[in-house]
Length: 307
Ligand code: NAD
Image 1 (cartoon, rainbow, N blue to C red):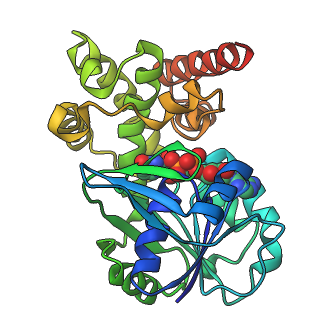
Image 2: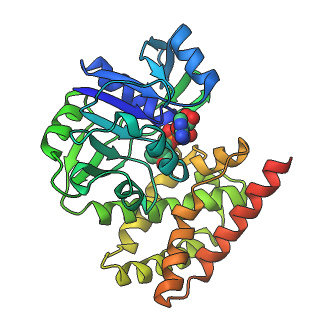
């Protein structure tokens, strides 16, 4: 399959290497000059667990440079960057192109619908992870999985088969929205609290009232979900959080929002806690914890960008 990955950052690079290794024709699309130059000159360096670094040569171009037709475009920008990416790559999207979004957060499907027909859209949620440590180098660990669903009549079966050929552990679901809200619930606890408490996941777990804060955030998300016909399973999310706190799982990991703040970047907060607070306002559901967390992360973004 001819596949473009729009947003060839930490996760896009990892998935791109796996898809290319499985025999797909992969093109990365990205706008970060140093990262593009490093990959196109010396290859993408992947350090997986404790193994020696390996180099992969996946061609990467900017949205302005990309040409040709693709069977599948995997969207892997940060959520606030998605709309701009879709505008920039409009010339390569034909009526036959399928688009799969794997970015975290809520509201992605609505953004993509502004650019293409529903029948071209697939939405997914992924447990694959990756860290971009410097231009042209990612560090990866363990394995992951993907749950995806066609939003209209996109061909989920052929997309899942192509991704599974690369060992991406794809499962087709008929309820991707519940999976997306579940992951957004986890991220709405761990991401902002890592920023505000200056803590990795395991350190957050040592806070005496950490899980109480989590419950307040999740309780609001559950009430907001009910207004949207989405059942949020607080017990399931709390169980997943407890697992993630363990150092042998994700405990030593600093969530991506923490890394964004460190790098002076805008975060995905408006598509996590901010999204729930916004829907809460529209539906007259009180969301004081999500609203406060959103405001504090925005304040932190401003402070770090000025430094
Ligand atoms: P990232 O910032 O490393 O990668 C995004 C890339 O998109 C960047 O390289 C950026 O240059 C590029 N980009 C954005 N807008 C662009 C534009 N208009 N033109 C050209 N290039 C553009 O982010 P990431 O960590 O790979 O995460 C991507 C998404 O996947 C996020 O929603 C994140 O929450 C989600 N996610 C990440 C992980 C992870 O472990 N990294 C795990 C699960 C989900």
